[in-house]
Image (cartoon, rainbow, N blue to C red):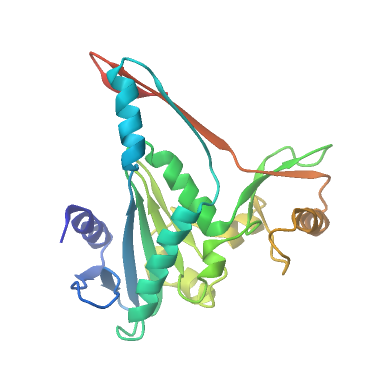
Length: 259
């Protein structure tokens, strides 16, 4: 068991669960089986690090005494979707064998740029965009879940949710499109993690978010916006994914600093 796996095991044990590390084999398999008094839960750990090319580029700039600047749009990416799809496949392959009730992926973002990867994981899972209202209405910018292609939707028959953890923060994201949704959200397993649980249905009912639940092509931006405007009686809207900008410098006394 490597260090990352040991830390995840200790995390679930600290919450009060009995955790078993599933031995590695030639078959696809998840990492952990968690058992409580009412359910069995499979968990697959996936870790996303800074790429080697990014590290080398950053180090080259810093060694020259220059600042390293990075700008990323916080949207769904094929790389992160591939990680989630692989985890889903591993969970699906062993769910029946272990008689598991629920399946979760544990997505861990590591490195200097972990905060942006953490948000990208969430956006990829939910296919979310922030909605800006034009010309009146609620001034608050709210998230719309399932506005664009969603990895929770694509893997809804397997994934009941995802733990997403960065260097300093984390939360449990619930797949409200899972056929198990009602059982999951009412389970003792999930209840252990409140208030750090993100449930789109709860967010919508409390007026904090929108849900685009229409069977429309996610490539038809006009139809998606029209549906959302009609469903919530909104004025003209602008769906938006925020950029994340970081600037890193190396100082003799303090080391690297990110602003």
